[in-house]
Length: 566
Image 1 (cartoon, rainbow, N blue to C red):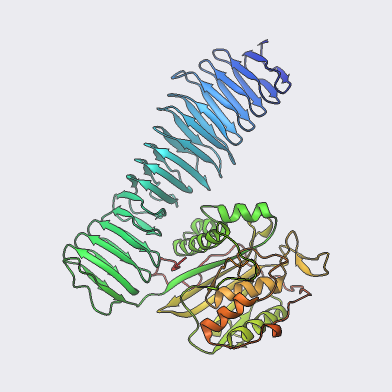
Image 2: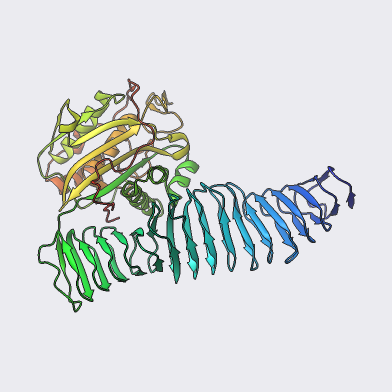
């Protein structure tokens, strides 16, 4: 079938085995799949449908809408393919491939220019150059030997080997880097990178970089940089001079260089090779030039984040599966690197539970490694928070832990502050989020945020309970979960526990896992029968809900690391 002329519209039935030759510009081909579309030299067309094979013979431009399409682009011919869909393939060499929002494309060939022109994209490619428009977020770039040029406002992950990532020095970029023999080019600015995959090797060029290490057994080369370490990492090796390390707690690292400085925390173990090093917050000092070890003694707060998810299964699954969550993205957009790192660590802990094997009514509570060092814990509720629901949640935890929870009117005197916020539950899957500070195993301050009922209304479900619209989570259940984070509990694999990462109809109250965890952490004694499940929800009042929130209101400016052992 030959289509000559311009601005034609062609309809091809599915699996008709038709081969359409397009010779013109402005044409549209609607194909239900299984067909072949050839573009004559210099032709342009829009191809809509899935499972089609497209051939560009030279100097073509084709816009591809749909999934599982293959575009064979003539090599070095000025061919352009623009993709809007998933699982598409471009076979190209020295051509231009653009990837639109919410799309995934595999680009086979070398010498291509791959352009990211929207957010939430996934690209598999090697031996190519990746460019992008400004403010591309949620990107995933996988492959080897790529040159990646990040524009202002970029956030995403790069995974592979021998890639070079060029960050915009003052563009507010956020990068997660994975793989081997990777290189990141950046000078002093407001960008941030995380070495995020176990066994990653990366070279940070330039000076004044600000980056974090949240994984184990990494090899990092950097000089004149500020390096933030997640709590509990081990086996990481750092090579470079004049670096400043902000340690978490229980870190075990090797530093090879000179004139490095360590801001220590509790139970850190640092082996030095080099000279003229120094450290703060240490108990024994930094005095091991031969690599025998140094133990830090505290002095800095760690910052944690804990999520509660609820809603449609697909929404929650997508939220937990993100490399960069909604709250981390918000923090990054507001230059809050500490908050972003805390949020990312909390998301990783939830993801580890989601990807693990769930139990039902059995299991162990997961502890964050810190607790309140007083038997009396104060709390305050902000505008828009239902006080009765909060009281009920604290009463349940009081019975499980033996703690006394005292409400105060002045938020500045509260150990735990509860606020309503716009967490965007319907799209993010987040119904609650908690940040808290800890030092030497003691909690210092926590802020609990739950979805405002002004943003997501409470509705009556089939059981007569008041739940957030589009979810099975009640307000009191959400408060129970988030207060659990504020008491030092992480997510557990027991799906009947209120500390399971996803809140639904089957975990609306504390179960035996939660109660035994409370007893273990705080030494309280209780009877599970006393902890009755709530059967009626609560209506929030007030309208002072904040927008999507920064994750570390509690963080001091000198500390840039979220501390989480999970």
